Image 1 (cartoon, helix red, strand yellow):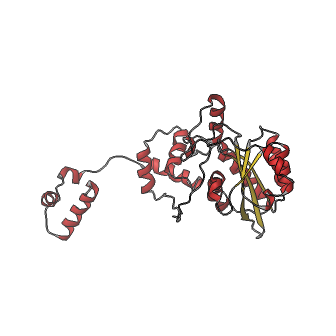
Image 2 (tube, rainbow, N blue to C red):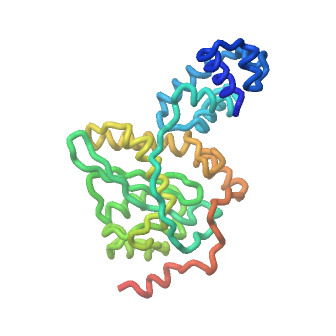
Image 3 (cartoon, rainbow, N blue to C red):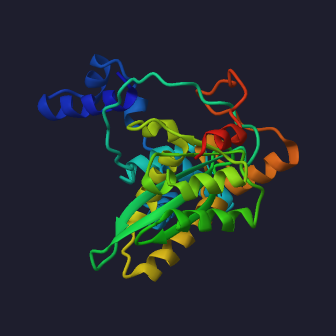
Length: 299
């Protein structure tokens, strides 16, 4: 039994039975000085600062709040931050989901930017009830969000136009990983990838975990942006989602990158060439299939 619990037991014993303080402490094997001890520390400034940060970022846990405190020049031990965080009732509640054990092929180790982009769609709605679709493009190595295109619908030509805008700013990827939606299996999209010699990796139907990088990104997008924002119209949705994308790339600490931001990690990777290993990955067993082989099978 811990000291805090023993002190509570001593208080209960003295309330229920006519026992002296020394007698109750002796029965529970606790020193009288330990029972009488009263902390002199003042956590109110830290508590107020944590509450302020939690109101700005309601879905951030204590680790990310600790990093924000550290960035603001407040040097506080992470264990103290966790204790005050719990006492203030700021714990983020997460839904526990049932997980199935599935057998899958090992993912190749990514060691540089633009080796693989992950692409998928997220869905939400506006105040009028009209549906929204969000096209997400994520660099699987640096975790940078390369694009968040918002519209009411996406044809394959709209998708390639968004990808072409990214290619105007950075090098083309070696591969694009996506699901089997009609926009991503159309002749136009396949021809666009073959023309630029980009390998197209379609995941197995019904197995979104094979595109885990973008699925994890969508969990953060929904948790920190879509679920806490009210979109009055399409332009309002584009503005708010674009602002969140900038914050995600340049301000939000990413746990898989050693709590660096994706932009910081991309700059470090470009300067040193040393990447943080992703848990659960193994080197590829064989060289990846090139786009030339896809060109031979395309009709």
